[in-house]
Image (cartoon, rainbow, N blue to C red; front, side):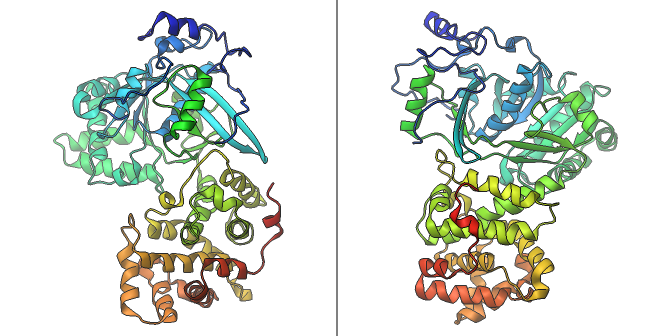
Length: 531
């Protein structure tokens, strides 16, 4: 048992099995602990907060829960952030609670901004708070997650990390180093290659290793495999090591879908900690929806990583294209198409936009009338998922800011919205119909780009068209026809250039409110907030 006072232990013993007493704070292990509340540290020193509560530690782990201190480290995780806590750690914890996995996660902090110190000070424990809407009704669930064993700082404790990967019980490596770190010139591929080489040298005939990247990059498994192969090719034992990689390591593409929005505001944290009865530096607030789709041979991966205890939350399948298209086109695509419009309108968060009379109607219009019909999803799968997206956008507890979503907007448009534009043209372009909502979103992007927003590496590609033209129609024609920018000549799609030009002129002349009011064909979904 980690550090903790007698008072801590006494407080922890109030929870028995997952029982909750009405006179006490909700047991943090209770899987369905509902509350009536209204919505409302890095690797260095953890900043102290003025609080009357003890810090979360092993003393708070309920005596009736699984014996986490006896479980081996079966997963190695690159990244200490909130998304993997809400997804990987939560999934492993659920599998441990169900008695089907029996393993813990050793976490690697590979940047100075990580949370290794806080993780170790709390004995790997953190509180998961799920808040949001399900079928239009508010829900809140709170539980203590014990799947993390410890955190290791890469720069200072690399030999210890190598020791973990050389153990036969370790068969899974998960990563979330963000898209910026998921490049061949970054440190992550080299560090991963070093660990796999350690496994090759110390345990060449050990069980297979499954590497599961979660970065939001298409085909992230094969891409990471290619990066590792390039690094391995430059090593002295390159040929033998690369042959071993092909036999003993499986790189699995994966897709994650869970919205987390960073550290809770001070007043939100204080209210939660009052109910919990302890201070948690890693308090993780997320939405109820959770999906981790992993592309692998189901039987092989389940033998090493049997965490799919909630089938709709963890999916292991030979092909995850359905889940990728569903998320990137509907959830991420709606975010990306709306972000510039919302920013021009002065609307700060996704929730505020979803509840806004005009932006909310715009969101529903593009989701139900343009994006979902443009996909290749079977049957009504697109429309059904679109309905859940609206609930997620209306989550009263998540402050998902448009300024954050709009980072790298140009690249996101190319990956998430252009496929819907081309899909719509393929399915309805012959009838001369253009996607008016998506055209308005595209025009808003062109208009918003003139403000020189930060965080968009591709912005110069648009700026060159602004500088080369004096009239809006000419600018729209040049920008949409830029095949290098979009991967396709958007000006050739039926009606899209005309619609985008019309919206661009209207935005520049009359503003966002007038453009939204002029959007034709607002569907009946716009007036049914329960969809």
